[in-house]
Image (cartoon, rainbow, N blue to C red; front, side, top):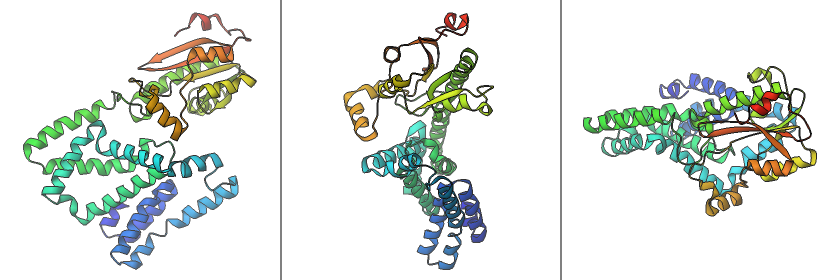
Length: 356
């Protein structure tokens, strides 16, 4: 869509935006950028082309509301993704996270420095094409900072091709000495970021830590399916879906699953009223420096994000009177299975295999 727009092929660009919005609703940022840009250039007729993506979006929202009673599918999704981040503190922190990820983290600061240098001394990024791309990037960053409660970095995926193109162009325009130093520094940092976790909390999906997460889930799912057939397992997303849906590839038959919101002491205590047969918990946070345990950070997160630390294994055993039966650890992550003291191990290998 961006390429077609910059080539002046407005009808084709508008059509591509229609298809984009039909694939992903947040894609509406791109045609909105184009329409506003053309209005600023006083090209009113062409600007109207980019109202076309509103038609399938409106139809989809009406159908969704008719089917579910909510324009976003359900009230919880609507509250978390459309309202939650509109709080000023949460919005500003989400915006800072976005800017850090794009322009500082994983070695990006090198490309950013090159961009600033080139912009200041060559004017390379002051062309219409780059200004249009920059306007879209700014709009997308603001949109995913205001909407989407999880503030996941993958929401920025549409910007990464543009960002790396900008980095490459900027480095190529730098003096040869800095060009070599920048490239030989940035590329290894980008590669290393796939394997090395940062020192601060981050989503597992941001690098190959998610491969470890999946591996642990597969081991836990196999163990649960073979050791506790027919029994109810309490856990939370995404392991809950993995156990419930054989087509995800973790189990061969659906298991009975009780969904949990989190693994906090509050949620664990709530299970005591109707204790499940089995409980599967896993590490949800990477925090090697224990910053979340500090009173200042923990208090801030509790105030503005309703943060609650994860219950420890001892707390789970004490609150629910459940015994730990299996545990796996991999690259700083872990998953642990507890069973009710009222049931017996299904096989001897269950006891003999703990901890695994």
